[in-house]
Length: 90
Image (tube, rainbow, N blue to C red; front, side, top):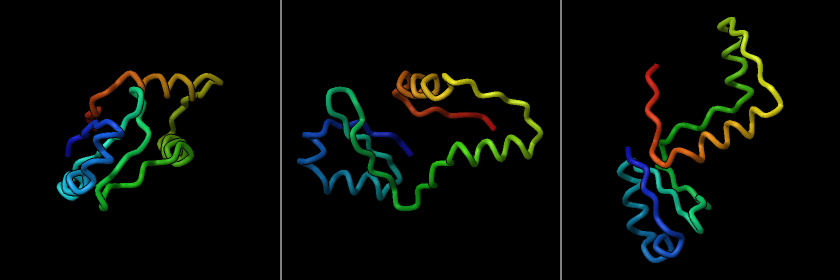
């Protein structure tokens, strides 16, 4: 699976091509002014995990992680700083 970045204008002019990418497993990010405004995902793409679900899993594993008041903004900045998909090793 690849993440394809495309301008909003290009996305509007080639919807059929975007559907073909999604059917092949690619994730499409449509951008306007260098900001992702829409995502087209393959139909079988997993649902993103909610933070509450992640915290429950951490709690079940005995984690002592503490989230401070700036956690949300820190996380958003990390996500914005990465244009390529992250490949975590689990």
